Length: 217
Image (tube, rainbow, N blue to C red):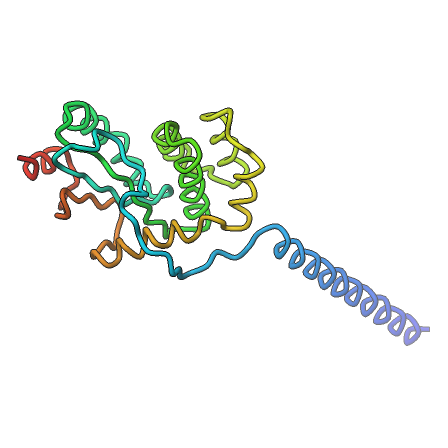
């Protein structure tokens, strides 16, 4: 009787373990299929060449000086710079037409970094007048940038935005080349951290408006 009980116990254990393994295998296959259909893996290289005139720019196009900012939307130091330094630059240098500011992606922190960068590219291409507002709101919400929330923010900023087109652009990485060409160009210039701020091609050390003003004569 004791041996029969042991045999039955091992049989039940085997059936239970086998059932769990089968369930996990089915779940894994389903999840893998879901990933392939819903999200395309972000590429690592691009053949697209960087074009300066394609970059989002704020300020008078004929301004004597150009301030170029390399950033990642998930970078906390970038968010701090946008909050503390950019308003001063906008007031003292952009509105006075002394300089214009050019924004260049340097996404590297996570998939969400690339998604936010692609969304910003999408906004710039389709609704350039709404780029800066969207740029700012992405930084304000940098801790919650899932694809769905990015689309929600974009629609909030620009109600006329094509929601489906943006969703597809993010899922299929349609603007990956734009983001990667920005980063590759930055790397060629020696950019290796964010935020990095250049004034007429000269990299600043502190990225503060005080230092920037010393380079603008």
